[in-house]
Image (spheres, rainbow, N blue to C red):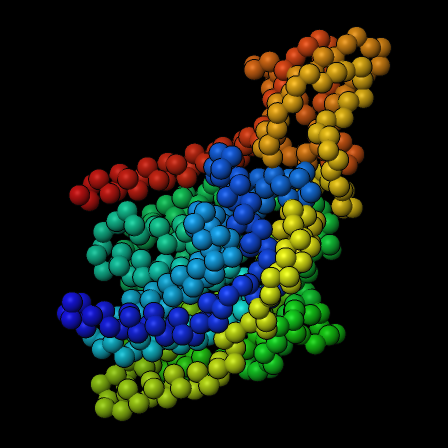
Length: 546
C-alpha cells in the first residue's frame, strides 16, 4: 500500500488540488451560468431518447414544444451519453456536476503523464499539470459559461498528446491510441476539429512513426464519423445556416490585445466591440510568464544556432497564431474559411494557449531541472498562479429551490440553446408554436381509428373515404428528412413540409395503417457504417497485438 501511494503520490496530489480548486461545485443545488440549465435539459432529453431506443442519439423529440429538433446531430453528444447514464443514478444536476469534475481532473492528470519521463523528477510535470488546471479559461468555462462540452474537451486534449507520445515511443499501433482523439471529436465539435487541425502539424514535425500516427488519426475520425460527417454535411438543414444573422456573429466577439493580460472577472457575456465585455479573456499571469519564457528560450536557441526542434518552432507559431486568430486583425482569415465562421466566438481559441503554454514552457523549465533552486522556482510560479485565480473559483450564485424551479420552467422543452433558431430545421418558421392536444390534422373526409405515439414514433389507422377534394394529413412534428412513413407495414409514403415546417402527406383512399418513425438519412447511415468499420478495425488491431 505504501509503495502504491509513493508511486502515485503526484497523481493523488493533482486530484486533491483539483478538487480543492473547484470545491464550490459541491455546494448543494445548481449554480447560475450562461449554458448550465441547457445541459440539464439535454441530459434529461438524452436519457429519454435512449430509453426509447434511439442510438446513436440524433433527435430530441420533446424540444421545441414537442415538435422536435435534430439536437444531437449538431451538438456534441459525448457529454450527454455520459451524463444521461449517470443521471439514472444521481439525477441530472449531479450528473452534470460530476462529469465537470471528472473532465477537469482528467486534464490535469493527462498533462502530468504528458511530461513525465525518466529524465524528469516529478516536480516539472506536477507543476505544469497545476498550471493547466489553474488556467483562467478553465474556471471561465466551469463557473461563468457552464460550457460542459469545452470542459470535457480540455480534459481529453492532453490525453490525445499522451496517446501519440506513447505511439511514438512504442513504434507500434495499439487499439487504444485512436480513442482519445475520437472521443475529443464528439466531446466538442469546434474544439475537436480545431485541435485535430493543429495535431496534423504536430505529428508532421514530431519524431514519430508517421505511418502509424496518421493511421491512428484516420481511425479517430472514423470512430467519430457518425457525428462529424452529418454535423458538417447536413448543416444546410438548419434554420440558422440560412439566416446566420439570427445567431452569434464571429465579427462581434474578437478579443482586444490588452484583454489577454487583464480583464475584470465577471459573469456576464461577450459583447460587440462598441460595448464592454462582461467576461474576461485573460491568459493568466503565470501562464503569460511561462509562455514568454518558452518563446524567448526558443528564439535564443535559434539565434545562438543551438539545437532546436522543428516541433518547438511549430508550437511557437501555433501559440502566436492562436492569439492572432482571436484578434480583429485576423478577420480576413475568418472570411476565407467557412469553418471558422461557425465557431461563433473567436475567443474559443483560448483553449490553444491553455495546452500550448506547458508545451512551450516545458523545455525551458527542463533546462533548470538539475539546479538546487529549481523547486523554489516552481513553487513561486504556482503561488503567482494561485494568487491570480484565487477569486475565480466559484460561480456568481447558487439557486435556491424556488429560483431553480422558475429557471427550469422558463425554457423547459422550448429550446436547448440561447437562440431557438440555432438547431431548428430550416423548413420551420421563426415564431414559436404551441402544440395542441391533437397530433394529426386532416383536411379531407377521413376518420382516425387508432393512435399510439411517443416523441420518435406515431402509429395510426386512417379511413380515407371517397371525396372529390384532395385529402391531406398534417402531423404535428417538425419536418426533417430522417422521418419515415410506412403504410401497411411495407409501402413508403413520401413526406413534405408544410408552410410552417410540419409534416404532411396525401393518404390513398381506404383504410390503412401508418407508422411514422424517426429514422436516418442516407448520410447518417453511411456515417454509422464508417464508425462501425473503424470500431471493427480497433478490434482487429487488438487481436493482432495479443
